[in-house]
Structure formats: structure tokens, C-alpha cells
Amino acid sequence: MGNKEATSANFLKNNFINNTQVDKGGLKFNLRELGGALGDFGPLHPLFLAYVKILNLDPAAIMLVMGISNILIGIYYKLPLPIEPMKAIAIYALTYKWDINLIYATSFGMAIIWLVLSITGLLDKILWIVPECVARGIQLALAIYLLLESIELMQTSILLSLLSIVIIALFITIRKRKFVPATIVLYGIGLFIALQNEGIITLSFYIPKIHLFTINDVWKGMLEVGFVQIFLTLSNAVIATRIAVNERFSRKIKDGQLALNMGLMNFLAAFFGCIPLCHGAGGFMAQYFYGARTGGAMVMEGLIEIISAIFLSTIVVWIFSRFPIAIVGAMLIPASIELGKEILKLKKRIELIIALLIAIISYLTNLSIGFIIGIMIYYMNSFLNSSFFLQC
Image 1 (cartoon, one colour):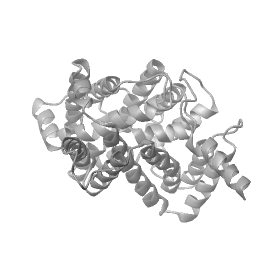
Image 2: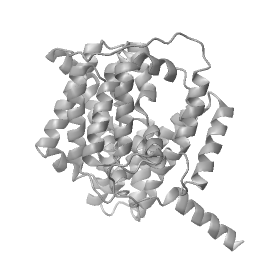
Image 3: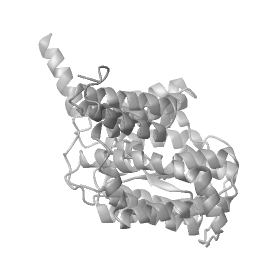
Image 4: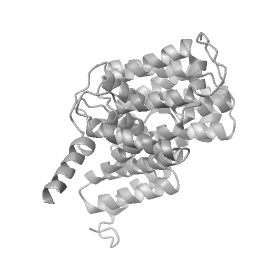
């Protein structure tokens, strides 16, 4: 009985839990990297499709900027650093049916913020006060969000969700062998199902356009939601992403580099008709879990997005608007677990308690409030070291 338990523990450790510090980045182009790229494929993001279907944004413009950004980041960092829509801005814009120029103007406002924070070094001075337990709490909150989102998506087709989970579990058991990544199989099934729907598909050729906006639009967008988004991005796209990446690769990234990336990509987005973009710990964990180990995954995703933008944008939107989201939900389950288990790295009980409080507060309110209250709790405990309810 003991041998069986040891075997099970070793299996989990080798195949699902202890996947850190095994690769050094680089540029590789193979099925494993492609599988990782598809683990967080931008055009399939629900917010991407919502922007296109509800606010009538041009999918080609979004894919073009995402594609260029993915390729440049992949080549420069030689690591998987996926990009995704900024969630708070997206939800607010969709709720209040923003004019497209207001969206581009907010991209510009976010670009200026992150460029200033990065270039001046102010970001590093701000983040030195953020303790590890606060970052771990934010990671756990993100894992909860991701897990609940995956469950909601899976409920659209229980049978297909269960099939997807079985396929993912099967590939976990054989992931050390040379085999087709799970995401390629799952995307193949999803595309097959999507193409069974009847409809008219039209080809298109996209020529990039320059978009202009007013300073008033920039100010309006930042006041309504942009400044709130900064705290969300700070916790998820900067702190949580930096920790997740640096724990798995020998080549380290810095907070200021992530901020610079977001500043540059949003500057490009503002004038070429794209939505506000950021990095994300959840997206990184999805790509990493499904095989991304080098910047090659980023380059391949970027090439797919650029080709799709220029020649196939209408086809891509047509297909992915019909893609079974139950498969996407199942794919998010392992990523959420990978992200959430990071809290177990906290050794002190008080830090674990603070991290759990942050996760709970973040879930009940939002990441910004959880982040701020978490820092307050941590330093209050440090200052009032004799507080009876926080002592170990």
C-alpha cells in the first residue's frame, strides 16, 4: 500500500506539480511550443470575441497588434509571455457600450502610465513594499476567478467537458514522451464541431488604418475605469506574472520590463485600432502547462494572428464564435490549479493567513481592493506585532 502511495505521489510531483526551473528559454519551433501557444490563444479569448460582436471592433486590427506584440516579445525575451485583454476596461466598455475611439484613447492612457512607471524606475520603488504573501494571495484569487470561469464555460456541454478533461489527463500521463500536445487535439475537435455549423464565410484583405482620438477621450476613459485597471494590472500582469515566470525559468524578468512591454503594446494598440492589452499570470500558466518553454510559442502565435488578420479575419471570427467553449473551460482547469498551488510556497503561518484573506477579499470585491487591503494588513501586523488575532 505504501509503494502505491509513493508511486502516486511521484506521478503527481513529476507530471503536474514540480515543473519549475526546467528550461532556460530560447526559440524553438515544434509541436510542443505550438501546443503551448494554443493554451492561451488570443483570438479565442471571450473578451476578444465580445469586443468584436458587441462593440463592432475590427478583429483584424486587434489580431494584427496582438500578433506583432507576440512576435517581438517572443524574440526579445525568448520566453512565453502571453498577452490578453485588460479585463476591467473590457467589462466596463462592454457594459456601457463605449464608442470605439474611447477604447483606443484608453489604450493610449494606459500606455503612458506604464511607460512612465517603467522608464522613470518609479514602478520598482512602488513594488518594493509589496511582500510575497500579498502577491501569493493575488495569485490565489486569480486562480479562483479562473477556476470559476472554467466551470461556467464547461456547463455549456458537460459531455464535451468530460471528454476534454479525459484527453488532458491522458496527455499528462505521457507528457514526457514525444507526442502531439493536448491543445492541438482539443482545438482539432473544437474546429471540427465549429465547422459543422452552417453559415457564409467570406474572404477579406486587411490594410492597417491609423486611428485618432481626443485628449478628452483619454481623460474620460482613465477616470471611469483606467485608474482602477492599474491596480488590477499591477497585481496580475506585473507581480503575479513576474513571480510565475521567474520561478520556472533561469532567465529572469523584471517588473519594469513587463510594464515597458505593456506601455509599448498599448501605444501601438491606441493608433492601430486595438483593445487595451496586458500580460497575465493565468495566460502564462495556461501556455506553460500545455508545453510552451521558449519564445517560439509566442512567435508562432503571433504569425498565426498576423496571417489571420491580413487574410482571414472574418473566417477566424466566424469559426471561433462557434467554437465550443466547453473545451476552453476544460483547458483552464489545470492552469487554475497550477496558479493556485503557488500559495503553498509560503512557509510562515501568518503569511499564509494573510494570503488567504487577500484571496477572499479579492473574490468578494475585486483585485484592487484585495491588493490594497492586503498590504495594509501585512504592515499593520508588522507594526502591531503583539496583535493577539494575528500572532503565530
